[in-house]
Image 1 (cartoon, one colour):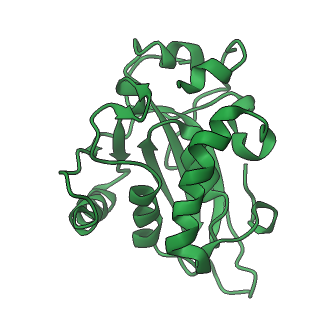
Image 2 (cartoon, one colour):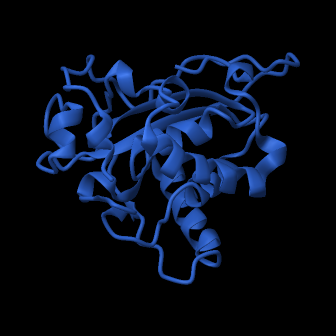
Amino acid sequence: MSDLDNAPEATDTTDATDATDAGAATASDGRRPSHRVLTMAGGCFWCLDAVYRRIRGVTSVESGYTGSDWPNPTYESVCSGRTGHAEAVRVGFDESVVGADLILDLFFTGHDPTTLNRQGHDVGTQYRSALFPADAADEELYRSAIRRNQENWPDPIVTTIEPLGTWYPAEDFHQDFYSNRPDVGYCHVIITPKLAKVRQRYSEWLVEPSESVGLS
């Protein structure tokens, strides 16, 4: 079942933004936050969006498109498979609360990184498993995370590390989709089981979405 089946007619996206831009975060206990942003693709972006909005220390979550030089993609054009973009999420977090390693372990828990260009019935390069480093430190972080998480999967991880290009925010309809469209079948069949898996492994990190800071 493709997430396209449940979407309205796509409209133009908002202006593209540099993927390294990050809003300021404030730690609840007054500590000076260390803010970091990671860009990740792992199937339908509704899924990872739902996961990260429920993690303590996450300060921003945005679904969008990246991975190609195709300008001004829309949901409709990306789902066609013609653009080369992936459905992705850009996650900002306070490293004084949650570490980058955990953010990436959640990534490898929240989707199947061993299936090439596919997540369940969602098939196409737009659903590929990919990580987009902003710098050399990100790239090493990603490579280390792949090595660390390989032991949790019987098949080889096929997650690619790709250059971080222009980031295009997805249409407003797709932001926080799971919370805003709980009646959609895709949420019940696909996203809820993924959240249950995350809850089983990382229950101590889960918060209600409304308790998180500055979610877009």
